[in-house]
Image 1 (cartoon, one colour):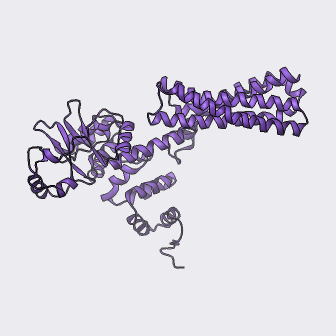
Image 2 (cartoon, rainbow, N blue to C red):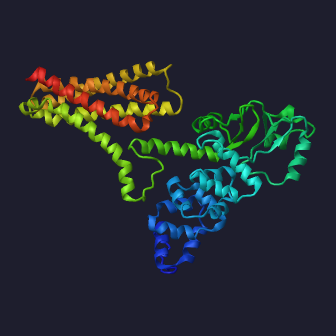
Image 3 (cartoon, rainbow, N blue to C red):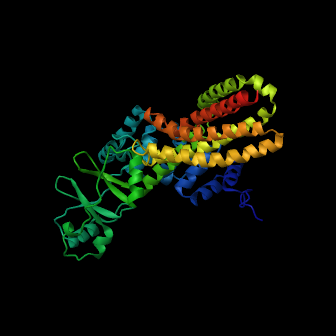
Length: 452
């Protein structure tokens, strides 16, 4: 096989880039980057250990640098921006959409943002300021200002002439927004209708009035649900007076959905979705120490419960062998329920109105599974240790713990959400503590009463 500049072309992309950087083959790196989409370059930078990121970033083509930053993880992007001057940041963001530029600038201190805005022309500054005035996790923070508008009292022929004179439409434009003279949103005119309708038809007669405007203050999570439920490609954003401000497109919503998924996944381990896997070890240790400390406290609580039955365990050694079964089965069953409820909360499908019905259903499932598993484990235990009493004890403890796990898996996330605590992050810790404590207490307590 041939090699280029000493780099094997069949190596993994990351290995090839690292090898080329270490050998000084910058031309080879530029060639690799030229074949990638900006999002793929962002992924490559994130996968690169910290010392090599600056070298790789320096070789990114200036024309796509802004797009690369818009796709990068927040912590990685912040580190890159921290090494740039306001003028350089303004240059990098000049070629990206307003919403993407706003995402980049929102990571910066207010003083730096103000300096960057001063370097821009009036129109760009006004557009960016309009988006930056809204929180990042709202419809206003997601929107772009490139919405194309028409009036309802003109014909389709007039619209077609307008579009020809206007030139290329913004990317991902699937409809035009109909407004009155005060820029109040009235409805949507799909491009498919523009192309297929009778040119003499009035816009008012063929426009879609069912697509409602999304208020700029609406949370991004709710925007994502609207797009999912209504199969939208784009949607108008309006202010409190229904005046059109801009539009949200599906690419921005996909980012929101991805971030929600990462948040749920990382949150279950007590981590943040924006954590950089190559950030300094001391910083990572500080981030993780909080939840490790919480887990340590809960572990001591569990150990204290076990310690209360020390004499029982010393008398019947088999209990020490069987204890993990009760705790682990409760933990797994509770996690299943917890996952269902957290997902329901995230989708807006679980609330006070149906919480009681969901709790009853989950406890019924736990009773069915608990009964079957308790009978199985009880028989196996009785045969294994030749002790029917021990089999009965573990059966009773297992059934009690599975029902408790279902109850906790349903109620814990609801309670955490009520106190404004993210159930995706804290739910697992609380649930594990409940199932461990109840499982051990039920098993060892029942054994103390019946067998000692």
